[in-house]
Amino acid sequence: MFNNLSDRLNDTFDRLRGKGKLTEADITSAMRDIRMALLEADVNFKVVKDFVAKTRERCLTAEVMDSLTPAQNVVKIVLDELVELLGSTESKLVLSSRIPNVIMLVGLQGSGKTTAAVKLAYLLKKQGKSPLLAACDVYRPAAADQLATLGGEIGVPVFRGDGAHPIEIAQGAVREAVDKMRDVVIVDTAGRLQIDEQMMQEAVDIKKAVKPDQVLMVVDAMTGQDIVNVVSTFAERTDFDGVIISKLDGDARGGGALSVRAVTGKPIKFVSMGEKPDSLEVFSPDRMAKRILGMGDVVGIIEKAQEAANAEQLEAAERMLRDGLTMNDLLEQMRMLRKMGGMKSLIGMLPGGQRMLNQMGGNLDESMLDKIEAMIQSMTAKERLKPSMINGQRRARIARGSGTTPTDVNNLMKQWGEMNKMMGKMRSMAQQQGGKKGKKGKKGKRMRMPGMPGMPGMGGMPGFGGGNPFGGMGSGSDMDMLRAMEQQMKRK
Image (cartoon, one colour):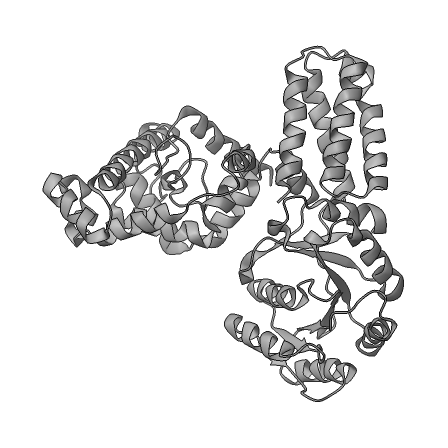
């Protein structure tokens, strides 16, 4: 996502930081680089022209040029302008008080409407809604079957109305929702070309028939600059309320997505960052801009951890802090990491993480997680609970049983030791916070992992930091990041 754009912008910022005091020529050169980076990322040229002009004007003020840290001020201005370009504030999905609410999806053929409909249904279901999917695409072969299959995977029913006209199917789905006490109907319409008048009129007719509370247009991030023409045409005919950008994780440029809000004035409501049902994210201009500029999305990491955590894991986090980490705990960490989207997703959300991934060619071998799981599963129950008993002979047996090498097992054992050392440091921090009350603190109050509410064992996640393939978060800078996360949560 925005890989090339992020790299180009960060290279520009690095050159500015190396200059100290900036001249007008330095700003002009930087703006030229930013303009080229945006154009190469496929951002609409009119959008680029306005963006660079506004940014340059702000950067040439005395407040920036005469400051002690002019380069940092330039980065801040670019961030501010990028946030404004993306929509300034988060635009949430607004549902009315009527039952059922109707959400209609429109878009081009192949834009990902059907999968977006399922992801949206999954998201609403998690929020306590009872969605119903309406299969109104009667033209694409097996479209209704695809929707029914995907809907079945997430436990959301699909109204098909086989053989009926799309308008009748949409109306029938609304009646079905009333009868079955479903409070949201998501209408998946047929894909169409903007030059296909008959198909465009059908979308208009469905909208008139069911009077949707929200019309969302699904656009493919890989469409490029043509995305502007597409959304403009649909805005004229269907007057949609917002945009879902699909396949954003699959486009290294992604500039078309940056153009949508500026050209149409329609907010981006959601972005799809993967293939799984839970990969639809509410779009946040501020957080997306920071990710583009390599500043990370720490709040997003916290949210993912909170979603993956449950009451048992919170109890386990407190036990780990009190008694230390077992191999069973580490195995649970692996599984939670996968729930949160995997190592690549999380590292990409860390400050500078996307740039690091880009330098690695955009690839991250997550097979190490499979190795760790195989090694732990090759241990006996006693070895998992008390890893310190694992001697050389046992390590050789574990390596044979897991199809790994003794070196792999040694690295795992070393990492387990480092994690427990960090647990000891965090335990000391907790004791200091509790003052003279010691480990237990106030009577009846459980000891918490400092600065990490709802993030069980974040410190034990492999793959973060260090040259070790099993990683770790035990350094001073890592502890600083933990404290920064805490401040982020307090501000929320």
